[in-house]
Image 1 (cartoon, rainbow, N blue to C red):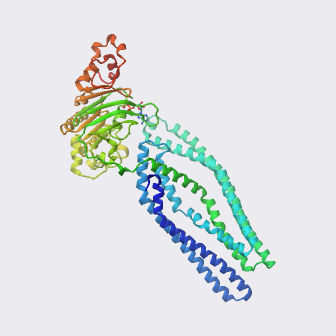
Image 2 (cartoon, protein in one colour):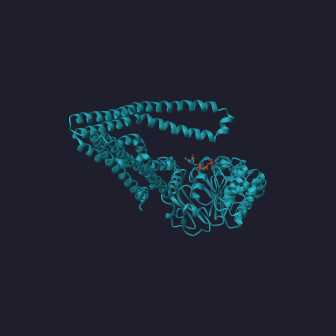
Image 3 (tube, rainbow, N blue to C red):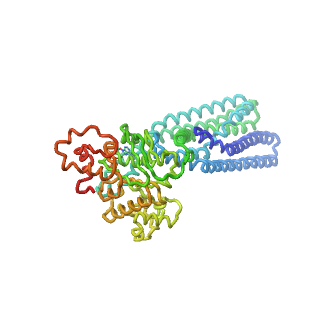
Length: 599
Ligand SMILES: Nc1ncnc2c1ncn2[C@@H]1O[C@H](COP(=O)(O)OP(=O)(O)OP(=O)(O)O)[C@@H](O)[C@H]1O
C-alpha cells in the first residue's frame, strides 16, 4: 500500500461490499423492467379479454414482484451499513492519528477537520445518495425500452431527463455562494463560542457576556440571512423540479394516449412507458438531491487524502533501544508555526546523562520552544536533537513517551481521575502510580483529596488548584521512571512547600540517574542544577556550570558601571564566558535573577 493512496486502498478493501450493493441494484433494476413490461401485458390482455379473474391474478403477481424489489432495496441499504463498519475499522483510528499529528504540526488546511471529513465521506458512501450512482447506469436501458415502445416517447423521456439535469445545475449554481459564505461564518462562530466557553470565568468576572452576546447575534444574523437566501433559491428550483416531473408524467400519459388513439402503441404501453420513465429519471432526481452531498464528500475525500499523505504512519520508525539519558542539540533552528522569524537559531549543546540542566532567560527568549523540541513535541526546522546519539525522531511518540517525562508551562491535565492522569491514561499499575506520586512528593496531597487517587479532576483539571495541577503534572512527568525529564517552569504556581517538594523531587531524580532539564528563574530550584544555559533572543548566551553562569549573571551590580555598552557584541554559544559582558548579562537575566536571589 503506498502512502499516496492510503484512503483509496482502504476503500478498495470495501470493494466486495460495494460490488454486492451494485449487484443488488442491478437485480432491482432488472426486476423493474419485468413488472413494467408485465403490466403492459396485463392491461392489454384485460382490455381484450374483459376477464376480472385474469386482472386479479396478474395484479397479484405484479404486486409480488414489486414487494420483492422493496426487500432487495432493504438488503442494499444493509450492505452499505456494512461498508461503513469496515471503513471505521480500517481507517477510523488512522484518521484520528493523522488529525492529531496534523494538529501537532499545525499543518495547513485545518487538520482538526480530519474526523469530520472522515464522517462526511463515510456518510455519503453509506447513505441513500450513493444509490443514484448505482442506478444511473441502468437509465439508458430504461430509455432504450421506451424508445422501443415508441421513438417519440423515447425522445420525450430523454428531453425530460435533460431538463431535470439543467435544473440540478441551476440549483447548485444559485445556492453555492450563499451556502459557502454561511459555512465560513458559521464555523468561525462556533470557534468563537468554543473559546468563550473555555474562558467563561474571565467573561463573567469582567462582565463581558453582553458584548459577546451582541457579537454573536450579529454574526448569527449573517449566517441565518445567507442560509435563508440559499434556501429561498433552492426552494424555487425544487418547486420547478417538482412541477417539471409532474408535467413530464402527465405529458407522457397524454402523449401515450394520443399514440394509442392513433393505434401507434397498445394501451398497455402507456402504463409501461410511464413506469419506465419514472425509473429512468429517478437517478437524475436523486442526483439532484444528493449533488451537494456528493460535492462535499469529494472535497472531504481530497482533504483527507492530503492529511493522510502529510502525516506518516506511527509505526514506521526504527525505535532504537531506551537511551541512558544523554541529550545533545546540534545546530538547532526552530520557527514556530505561522511565524517567519526563528525562535531559536544556531543552538548547540551537550548534556551528559544524569545531569540536571537549568535553562534561564528573559520572556520570549525561546525556553519553552527548546523544551518542546527536547521532548519531540515540535520538530526543529534545521538541526537534530539526540538522545544517546540517536535522533529523537527515530522513536515513535509512544515508545519515546516511555522514557521521556514532560511538564509543560500550561500543565494541561485531562478529564479523568488523578490516577489516570498520573499513569498517562495507560495501564493502571497502582504501585507505579503511587511511586510516581511519592517521587513528585504529592502522595500526601492526593490522599487529602475527596476520593484520593480516584478523585475525578474535571475538564482540564478544573477541580484542582493551580499548584495541585502542577504537582500532579510533575507526578505524571516522572511516571515510569523516565530517563529524561523536561520541566517547563514547574514552580510557577507553587508555594514554598510545593517548591521544596519540587527541589526534593529533582534531587531524587538526580540520585536515580535521571537527566533533568528544568526551566526556572527561582534560585531555590536552580540550586538543584549542575549546569545552566542562559538563552537570549533564541541563542545561547551562556552555558556552563551553575556556579560559573550564576557568577557571571549576578556580578554586574559591582562591575556594571561604564562597561555595559562596549561589551554588547560577540556573544556566542559555548561554555560560561569568563570574559562575559556583565552589564548585558545582567540585562538579559536580571528581570528574573537578582544577586540576592542567586545562589
Ligand atoms: N505556538 C506558537 N506559535 C507562534 N509563535 C510562538 C509559539 N510559541 C512560541 N512562539 C514564539 O516564539 C518565541 C519564543 O517563545 P517561547 O515561549 O519559547 O519563549 P519563552 O522563553 O519560553 O518565554 P516565557 O519565559 O515568557 O515563557 C516568542 O517570540 C513567541 O512569540
